[in-house]
Image (tube, rainbow, N blue to C red; front, side, top):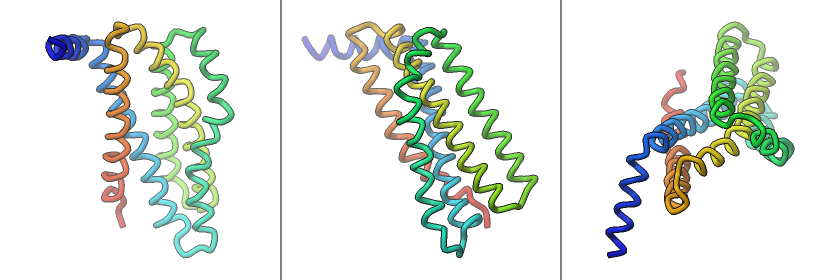
Length: 180
């Protein structure tokens, strides 16, 4: 009998249109995030700092830059997200990150100055990581709204699985995308 209840909960969660849209959207967004960070790192190694003595520092700065907003902005972002419309917050943070990445892409096509490109790499990584600090609490609050209390452990587990899968897929597809 417990397996019947478990399968009914699973079916009802996947029948929840809002959860499925959140899961699919979050999966695509996370794959894109990991793809972008890995691509930036490979680009720094292969192009921007190739053969330079400061290459290890340039590459080692990437995870540091991505972690800074978690330490400095993360504790405060949830306070603002609680006061804002969560769905709008999620949409705007992803749209702003997309716009930032698009501007960064245009910048890489328009300039060849290594210092400017490296600084802009760090800037866009910082900008995207700041957006994530607002997106994540909004996602958690929305999940509490769209899943029943019985479904929440499974829903959080499915989103965590999507996150782990994105950590594998994103960097894996970024390496072949770098052209020589």
